[in-house]
Amino acid sequence: MDPQLTSLIVPTEEVAQIEECLGHLVEDTGGNYALLLDKSGQVIASQGDGSRQDITALGALIAGTFASSREVAKLLREKDFRMLFQQGVRENIFIALIEEQWILCVIFNKGTHIGLVKVLTKKATDELAAVLDRVRQQHKGRDEVLGSSFRTSMEDTIDLLFRD
Amino acid sequence: MALINVAAREIHCKVVYYGPGMCGKTTNLQYIHAQVPRDVKGDLLSIATETERTLFFDFLPLDLGKVRGFQTRFHLYTVPGQILYERTRVAVLNGSDGVVFVADSARDKLEENVRSLKELAGNITRQNKDFREFPIVLQYNKRDLPNALSVGVLDKYLNGLKWARFESIASTGVGVFDTLKAISKLVISRL
Image (cartoon, rainbow over all chains, first blue to last red; front, side):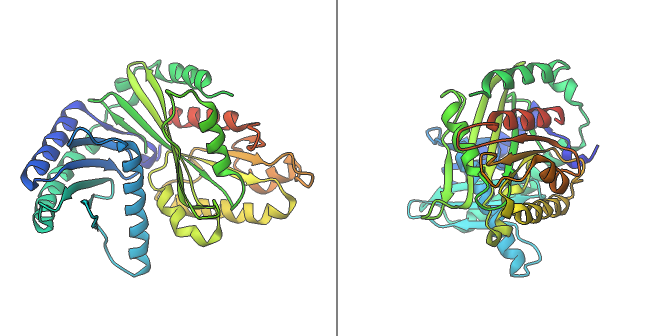
């Protein structure tokens, strides 16, 4: 099958490493929140201020914004586009791409210097790229993770919930 | 590609509604949002112009609850249909696991449907995915129009790859859930 169509399975151990990396990033920058997204906008892990809500919508919008800015960069004939900075009144967001697959975001306020965020984010993206590499190299099948009867159960749930 | 988070025991899938301007993509999401149980849906997020045309995308997260111990989430998106927004469609399509192509059945929209489907094929291919293998479901919308083309004609021009296809009237909900069920099952079968 087309490798692009197979699922990306992130095992428990790797999620723990990702959370640790995000935790360090928040702590070392003095930022408010860090999250790792898949390029499709889905949140893989997050660390920081626990009161933050609407993470799902935030993930979808950040991934959309990044993909859109990337198209702008292409029109401007940029060769590579990997970082985006949103300056807000209360909070700023720094976004960095990890190997065409994941998006790392750091949300921070005026107390944190952007230069520090840039440097430490670069370090974190290197670490996370190594984790991504390990995730990609694992060849666990879907059935091994989900169980062979998952599909039938899922179809029953879809029939139950998706109706007028 | 779908994302399976083993630690959080979560599965995430992204489905995009694609098609020409005013074909009924947003209407599909609005109907789904109105009908599914409260605990299944999140807020419907729309980034639209002042005239309610989609500018960036609509987004509807659906949480199907635990299936065999895994929390399963479908994220539904629409693209802006107007020709002007081609690059925006590329951005929204990024990382999608399946597409519903919504075609407008009106006689004078056939060319727009064909052009939009061709653009979709190009955009999927540019993401290094095989268009012939990619999970797609067709929806022939606005079947209640007096000048609607026959299903046979629409099949001839749009369904060369023999995808599952559904007739619909999204404004009243006819065919909306049949389409959603079909694409969801197709995406799950490819996990």
